[in-house]
Length: 415
Image (cartoon, rainbow, N blue to C red; front, top):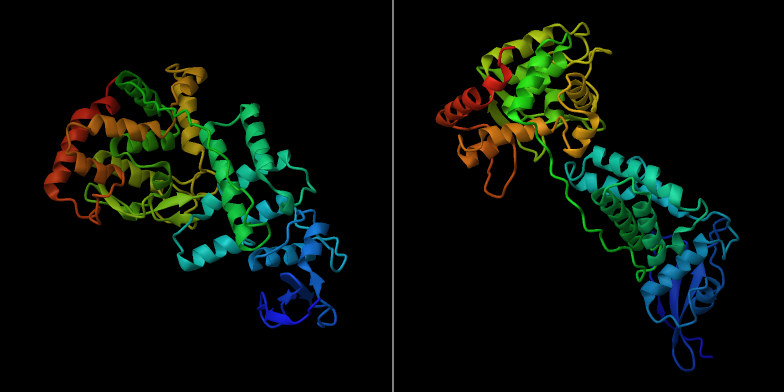
């Protein structure tokens, strides 16, 4: 064997990387070798054949010809304890949990460093909960990340479908979340570049968001007016007349109310807290003065004024922002208690608090220019530019007129 060294590999990280690759010319071809650094003495050990390490790792018998593959095998041999008899191995479960843990995730930390608005902490938390609740129970606790393959991923997907608890859309989100994590694992050389990380998506069976009829809406508002709980009445009133989202209503402050208008420039999310609205653009929405007066009066009733000064929909449990499920829960409860709909009808028709936003959009459409409607409701499109806060007065008058004609009669209908 001619042991003449042809090429010295570059270190993987810093001056004291855990190993260095080299390529050695044998009689018939070049072969890759690795020299590891002893973690205790920092001295380099004698070189080891990458081909033999590949055999020990049960990765096949083909000769390694690419530096990229040699690097991965060298790292894997180190991770799996072949070199220093370490028992520490990275499991698939731990890898997924760490990836979707903002405090530990190298991927998301870097992403947010490059663009602080690129991803919401609530998005990360939601994906983490999906992984915890639906994926981890399907994976053996000692299943190593290095063993992941397409068969395993397809098995996870199949089990999720067979449980019949999640929608196709949610399952696709879960599998996409796993795929994103595994692509990062490739980048970090935790798994081979040739590892398949994606499974075919399930064809989603879209479920249209249901809305109430005008008769049901009028009946609901009559019922809510008689309740002592003003939060649910005012929140439904506000969503129905302006199309504001739940997170925007949760964050509403009296400082954003002025001259018959609401400046929607903030929303509230459980993890991120107060943040920009969806689409990262503020907008102006006209609102009946009668409702605005009620909103400001309700804000003054907050006994915990030191918490969030001016917060309109303060929580009775401490004065802070109401919980994320509050409006939807109370909305559905009211539909059932008023005998307007049953729980089954609500589920079958896909009715939720968000339906009021769609109701607003439906009732205003036809009476308002589509472009202005999209600006007001807050739908984004390629044509919409940064003029949310500069709608002309004529457009605002048109919107007010449409609200008074198409929506207010449903809210103010007498018993």
